[in-house]
Length: 401
Ligand code: SOE
Image (cartoon, rainbow, N blue to C red; front, side, top):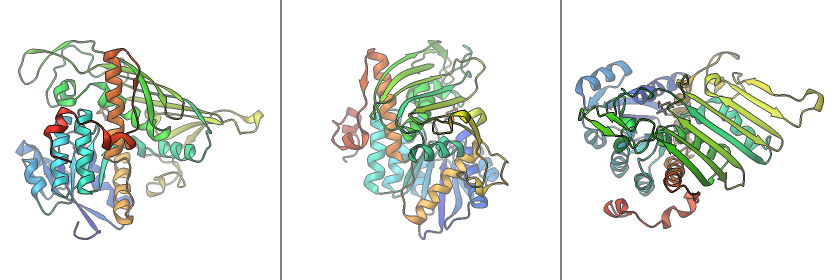
């Protein structure tokens, strides 16, 4: 960035997440007036018509059809990766090596080895980086996190996390196409674990702390699907459902469940945390409400309260409408960009960053290993063990670190 006033963005990907990120860059300057502005310099898609139309619709001043050209441009400061999971590592490493800041859609890598290479690349290049675990920026969840940090729940004993969907239940749904690459594990890395459990794990580690050990199970209910590219029926290795029990480093216990086979549920992300002095409960379908029980209340009046997180003293809400009017899903991405820009102005690191993404991937990896081995698996502490880990085969063939 030639000066700290304009962040020049190059976006890879024109799908669902490309739109969510582009909307955020457009809205942030209207609602969060900070020292740093955003310029949408170029969007990249292999399909030229898509790239051109997307640029026109979302306000990018140019487009590219090869991400390598995007990374090579010297009028771009941040490469934002909103393309499928099999592109994350290669683009992120190249972008960091070119001295660009890097933002990446979740999950960080398809595997732990990819995630480690990505962390290594941004840390070696000392470039600002972030991962889009957007639900941290739902105001009700930011408030929940603040309340936990303030000690309002006291020592935590239990937590529960669920992410339920039903969009892959039809056996006729193919794998591997533009909207169904998530079912092809060679592209996605895993099924619900990297996609939906990942959100639960990020929220859990942010609210409660590091997960220490897990015991998981996974299931594939439809073992073969037609592949959109080959046209043939091919084996499915991406899990349709994943559940696990966890023990956190602080000794508290949790259960996690994610599935694409919960008929009737489209995106039901819910969580609950129970502590010594109180509990919180949250539900994505009612995302502006935080349910809170405080045992410290006067006993005759004790009960669950439902906080409508829409007042001007609630996180992020002052920037939006008048108190009482709520916001939605897309605003979480706007908040993440606003915080990233603020971090660039103040020099403070914005979280979640690639290391937080790696911390999620480590738990995902442990859950999948546990499901395969039918054993409890220890996760370990990313921040302490990362540099001393034994390199894998993928690491050995990667650039020296
Ligand atoms: C999957 O259907 C999906 O779009 C995830 O990939 C997103 O991360 C989640 O927020 C909503 O569901």
